[in-house]
Length: 208
Image 1 (cartoon, rainbow, N blue to C red):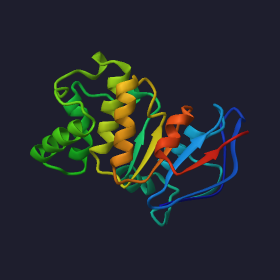
Image 2: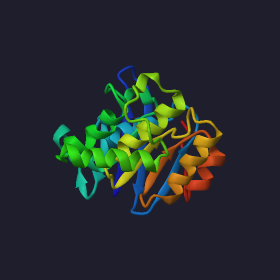
Image 3: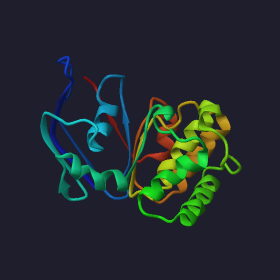
Image 4: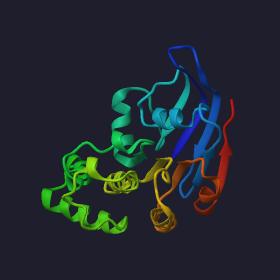
């Protein structure tokens, strides 16, 4: 599904984040990326989504090399990217508008999009939140709604940046349950190693 070859990325201030980095993600993989802050985990996700452009290397997704902005349109439709900060993901005036945004942009009818909203809120156990305003939610509630927005897109692969951040014990258990039950491959960035071990098959440690 994803093949990263000899990838190098440097920020404008000269900071080298990734150097000759390689990674393969196959169907049914459930992978954790762990390691200290600043080692390039979130940067890698942004490169996969086309939000950052590497100086060297190849990014091959769904069998096609991705270089230009137009190359990533399909990627953003088929890969669900959970941002580290939920406020970067929620921008509509109500929860249902945020969740419906993706399906509507994929050409779903308003009626079908509302069906998806209902199904997805049930999946994340957030029924009754349709008319709530995202800015009024707690950090944990925002996290689950942000997760719902990417699940509503019916993605083929998930990139989850700190999915347990801000979740209380009950919400954490719910997130673990969802990740266990959904039939999707994913890559998780998390500092909560004990939780990650419950829902992944392999871990890769990034350093320097």
